[in-house]
Length: 199
Image 1 (spheres, rainbow, N blue to C red):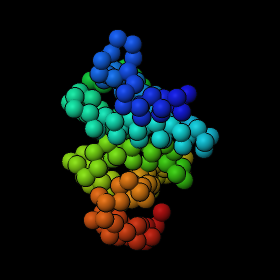
Image 2: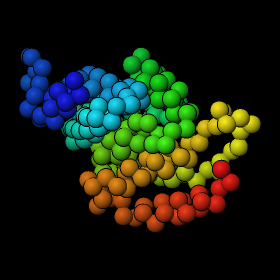
Image 3: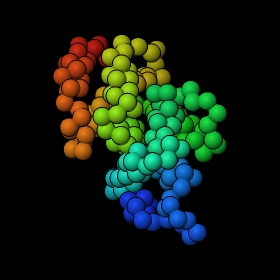
């Protein structure tokens, strides 16, 4: 399914029947939200890679679109991720994807599940643009937060780890290299400072 969706969203000439302008906003939203939810649930590495590519391509196509309703979708998806859970009046599908991401992101995992793939896909929508800079700036701010010790390890939530995993994926993405050079040293400083954390 993911490969088929990737092929559809990557093909600029594809459009549903009776459409003269290719995919419309609801098509992009459906593909993006489906990928969003799958990235929060998948554990199989092959399937995860396919869905990551689909979401990244969907974000890129949205970012390149001339329709403001479509080009604004990556920012909307960014607003409903774990770092910004205060999106007003989301649609039912977006509210559901927010709930899934928010519920699962509290659990400390080595690679932060699908969150880095989601954030990197959003960063790819308009490399070097205002959303790109906002994403990098907010990730760094979260990564710098002091870690708070909880009474129980099962209650431990470290958004700093998720932010650093997202930064790592963005900085190592070959398509984003021309836009990330100025962020490398600040991110290295954050990494170095984190070694002194008692947690």
